[in-house]
Length: 281
Ligand SMILES: Nc1ncnc2c1ncn2[C@@H]1O[C@H](COP(=O)(O)OP(=O)(O)O)[C@@H](O)[C@H]1O
Ligand SMILES: [Mg+2]
Image (cartoon, helix red, strand yellow):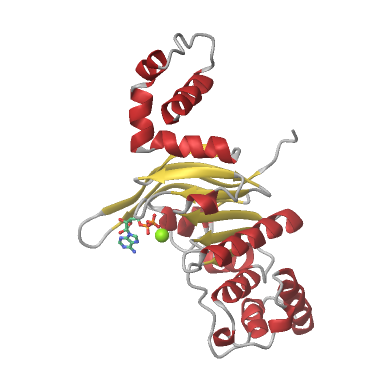
């Protein structure tokens, strides 16, 4: 496989929020993302997901450690606002559209001062087409469904042709169907435009619609694996659950009791998968 270049990298990233009792939101987070990847950062509430995304997106500065985006160490960039405007697109849980502006006007906003007017119009049309809302261009946010508003937010995030798209719980305020549709849209943007996308979520179903899952716990990346078949992902999830842990603990006994005897010769993974399957039946 062709070696793909790294576009986002964090090294020993630490973020401590001060004022009052200190909170160590990131505690040495190491991760990297390749150009053109669609990845998830998953983890429980409070594990530091938003903080990590905000550091990568230059919304805030780290306490220590490095963030490198497109080969640039963010700590050496003076004008983070300009960097962010040019290189980063954000989608949040709440779409944050301006209620008094139409869909197309909302998409155009980030282009002001960056892109010439005629070009702005053209690009807005293309983006609304990309997200499937060309016939809603003149609608106000209040005249759109939750899923449609989030589509506008995706189009707006792409307005300045950023190098990376960061989405913080993009499906968090949507029902299951609309959430899946937003993930399908992100897949399409990734596939058709080669856009590098990092999605933050605590929802496994969302995570499985990406290519790789990084797990954050207490401010550190504790697991990093490519998304596998639904069965293997189910087993991974089971293995991490209380039930799975207890099955794994009793694996030897279970195998013996059901007469499978020695499990010599199986790979470690095969062995534990079989152990889990045996335990389940
Ligand atoms: N601006 C802030 N000031 C103080 N503490 C914060 C701030 N933002 C986040 N935190 C704390 O940092 C930790 C990680 O938060 P966050 O990155 O929002 O987690 P997640 O997105 O995974 O839920 C939490 O304990 C949270 O309370
Ligand atoms: Mg968060």
